[in-house]
Image (cartoon, rainbow, N blue to C red; front, top):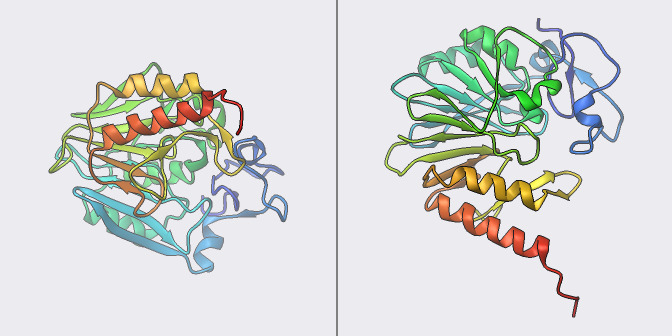
Length: 272
């Protein structure tokens, strides 16, 4: 299905032709300034895109594209003894990407933080015969329904030994993060996409309902996410972009970031 339409702004592939991209029309995203524009995998290949695969941390390999597509995020191949998990998603896929990922052990499961990163998830699922785990609260945003997509419900869901999806609910109601209990040389790792966004000062993370439109997340949602994550220790926090990684003391970085966020969000002190 290399000619299926892909929104040029967010990089999400749709099941058939259409005039609009509902994901970009939502207030958390935006329609490109030149209007709704479309591409396809065939068009991206002709334009010269290629795989960009580099180590991002112990047992973690970044999977991106040069030039970048959509929002510009990279995915992460989490390499575990029980099988590899592809965390989050990129739009671009070709035979070379498939070969390189297979050389790294392939993909046993795919999990995606939120709808902005759904990309070409069905093509990836078919290429590696892997299920795609999406929280049921984000079912309405799946642009290309397929039997490979597994919708789960509740607060947490195990997808492998020591691999737990947590419905943090930040950014989207179904927004999820992945905890890896047995990450090498650490007390665990958290893969957060931009549900908990690793910011430029990589000692901190941010909590936003919309990043491009600068809409802050609701304090009650941040408190709920923090409560759910308390039972999962982690040193590293892997964000959505290359090198956006909290390398040490990640649990504390999330706690103090939430405390700072809530302090600013709820501060009713009159301005000086």
